[in-house]
Image 1 (tube, rainbow, N blue to C red):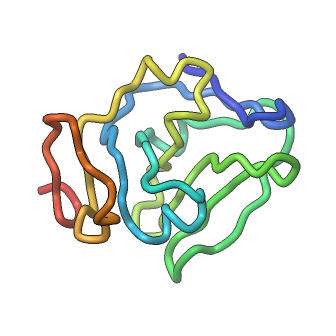
Image 2 (cartoon, helix red, strand yellow; image 1 turned 120 degrees about the vertical axis):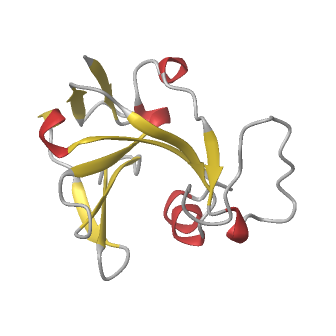
Length: 130
């Protein structure tokens, strides 16, 4: 079991079950919604993600995507796509222990900001991983 929440503590969540697809996403939507040069995510089955305290605010970031965040402090929490209804992506850095899930690659690097220099040896994919 993995736990996390927002910066101010108003929202808490629990993740149960295996995680996968740990990545640093460089897409322009992730950048704009987080105010960061890229966002670290992991994927879990929708059934394995549960908010245990508070209620996240939600907005549509594309025709198929919806994102949640804390309305009080602004912490980005999740991304879900109607194209993949059985999974949800969760921000790694909203975990209580973000060191527990390190990204395994970089995705959507075709949108990477040119001033972001990669200094790791993780695989990189122009769009989604193969």
